[in-house]
Image 1 (cartoon, rainbow, N blue to C red):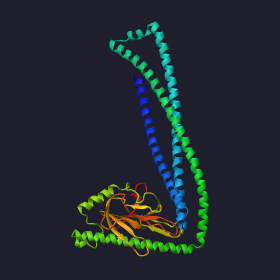
Image 2: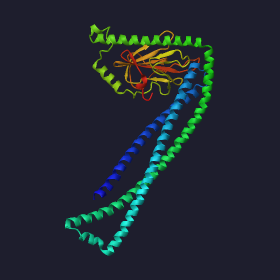
Image 3: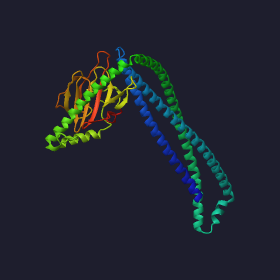
Length: 411
């Protein structure tokens, strides 16, 4: 009887383990597929914006940023599809082994079951089954022997049917996986073709870089000037926020900390707004409907002059001409700033957080206005010389910047 119990227990454990592996693999595959679709959409956005701006003469910096970004996205897409293919290949191999194992087990069970039927038929004629029961030492042992015969017979039949059903199921799974593998291999082939076309663009990119190197000192001087201009605007924003902090403390009666405090004295309403803003971290909408990041947050090598570094307090987002700028969350328009030799920008306050939207051509709001998530607040400036439409977007906690990519959904 103990041997029979082990037979019953082992397949159940095996099925549980295999089911767990399949579930994990399916979840992983779903994650990869979601990421693949995101990358495909990203490439589509870049290509669309490139097509819209095709007639315009872009700057060398803009062209190089497009080259670098699109190539990186394509490489990521190829990497993801390769991961999908490898995972599918692993699953297919596992399923093939499982099918082979189950077929062998099924054959053994069928053989044992057939032998049992034949033996039962012979024993029926010889009445050995009755003798087996009558030879029991007592009624309890006879009852156990009868139950054992029934259980063994039922187990053989149920096990055979179960394994047959599992074999059919695995064959279907294997067939689906094979189809998915073929689909992914086709995608990889397409990505390779796309990368070949990008290699041609890389060649043009290299030619452009060679041309730039001839006038590297001129470009370096222009880059430094733009960096100083960006730093000047960022200092202006920082001073505005520091003044706001001092004002909030003064209103709260914190006279001792009016000029020295680095944190806001928030009202109850402002605390609720700030908490709501934080709870939506990573889920905020993009400040423009269509676009992609051309410059990330933090210190990084300049794409034109590698010896120079760029300090970015936010992100730069390339978008389409006439793109509307949207508030990423509920808040109050704290300041609209006009600076000499620069396009205006809007600052929205969310409790002790601020979002800044730089390089605007039109502004739809005024200071003190209450705004809601995705409400249009202005329009991005389009450079008439090169046709570039780029929004600079910054997130502040108090007077310190934070990485916008951690706040905006799938940035």
